[in-house]
Length: 94
Image 1 (cartoon, rainbow, N blue to C red):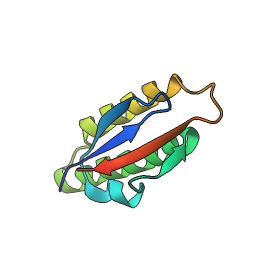
Image 2 (image 1 turned 45 degrees about the vertical axis):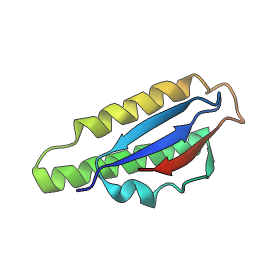
Image 3 (image 1 turned 60 degrees about the horizontal axis):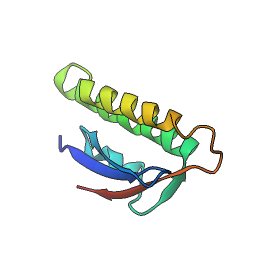
């Protein structure tokens, strides 16, 4: 199962390199696209939970790294929750 890292730009112009245990993350995001914060969170939850489930199906256990990454995304997002125009841009996959 190929791991994928994806770089995102937060509303304050800082960037993060995020981790997915599965290339299925590419089915949820498009490089260069900005997502409203709520949509980015919803898609991150769906994508990383799906990726973790793929790990469970293959190896018999969920991916703790996917859960940790999702937790970090949710934590970062709280800083921008008051800004109704906040967007997160997926910059690239590697």
